[in-house]
Length: 252
Image (cartoon, rainbow, N blue to C red; front, top):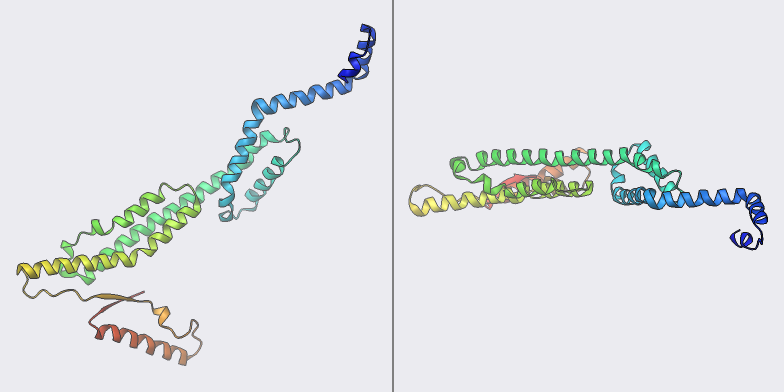
């Protein structure tokens, strides 16, 4: 079009051609304005939506609300358009409820970890009282529960739901280790008392072993009375073997 205008050798022909190509010129101007708008303001919205979507993708498997998932699909469609300029202003509002829901699920998961940590502390305190009643006041539970504190601290710093779930799994896995620490600390206290002659009758705490009752079963599914009898006999034998070895048994 520009080449055509430049070939005109008079002002009259120039403006006549200009009028004839008015629609093309207006369309060209509109395209330029779109480009200016995109690169001045919309590109930031476009890039932000792209980054938000990338961050949200791993979290979406924890979201079940169809309306929110449809919003995500719509954002993907807009980002894939050849000319998304008319839809770009909608991107932020489309993703906002999705981001809010992810944060809600994350906070719920963190709360579950914190609740689990409190329950574990209570369980440890009950175990100390029942297994080491005579010296329970001398045990340093604060030192023993440091591993729980570390998990709770780390879960409050996570930014993804999967990370929070991983912290909960980590928390659940350390309970046997903490119980062993209780027994170890109790043994050390009783040994010191014995060496100092402060308790002539003090004896070392019997070792505690854990028995996972489900693993004792000869098969994973019990269907008959005979299955139950076989399982109970296997469990009885396992427990008696440990007790005869001067062990105390913790059931799991």
